[in-house]
Image (cartoon, rainbow over all chains, first blue to last red; front, side):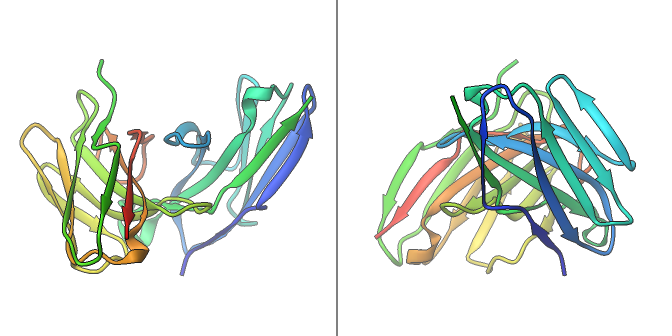
Length: 112
Length: 114
């Protein structure tokens, strides 16, 4: 089966750095995605990791370790607008890569 | 470039009724996926359409069905509505088939079943 685990909620302070972890159990997958979803809105793409290592994109970075079944999203210089849910997702290879499985999301609250 | 659009925005139905939700994919995208998102949960994959054919399906009963049209727009049909079908239904398009690409989500249709 496929399971994705993320913390339910996190709180951080404006200007700080926060790391949102994601662990997964799946037999194999094409890549791992991170999406951001503001309340009442659609998810928007943040990152896609295929290979192990860190991918940096502005204030956001994403890390993947396939051997450890682990990923994290790192948000630097937090802003109030970063308050949102962050969704970790994988496309399992045993489903032909057509199916994307999302975690329940981590709700991040950024306080002043 | 027009983004993904969905209609209607909100919908209220009663148990046993049928509903059709619509999605227009982003220009140039030939793949559409549908998701159900319950409150406080992540999106759950329903199915994907590629060039008018169902390309993959999640763990949803047959009363969830869909169509994709030659212009790559899509419909999600749900028959015999149940209370648990109340959720946000998201449509996402991507330029290629399979999960190995960024998906662009529409704003969703909020379905309430009474």
